[in-house]
Image 1 (tube, helix red, strand yellow):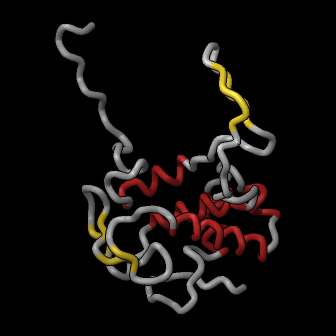
Image 2 (cartoon, rainbow, N blue to C red; image 1 turned 90 degrees about the vertical axis):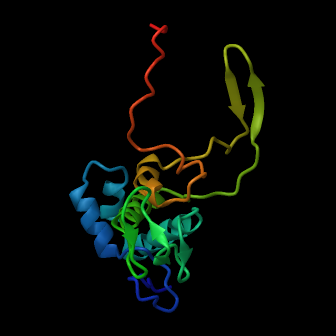
Length: 175
């Protein structure tokens, strides 16, 4: 399957948020990022498959505004939280960088998997959780999600807390 990158012009059959060359550049600029070594040794078809998987993952998030095509971007009516509006044909840098991060991780395995409860036993003290063979807790892609938070709808788990903020001051009678 050919990689068809969305560039804001809504190409028919778009299935990718970024190009292989863009992820190559991202990997070269971020050598300490998890997955860079695997990316460097991967074949072109494997890299393209990882980009498509990252793009599908991103399409499942709850974005601000309305999609104009098959993929998450371009969108109309989208703006960063407390920030600038995103043009109707614009592909935000945050989205592209998150796609690069997720493509690197996708080489190691699926970003989304079918899940079952998988819990074999739970013990209250000291806390002990045992999973069925092949089951684990879900993976969260913290770095990618922190980039995307300003573009996601309010009220979702990923969009409710600011990336950086000061803790609320303590009342005067608390030391």
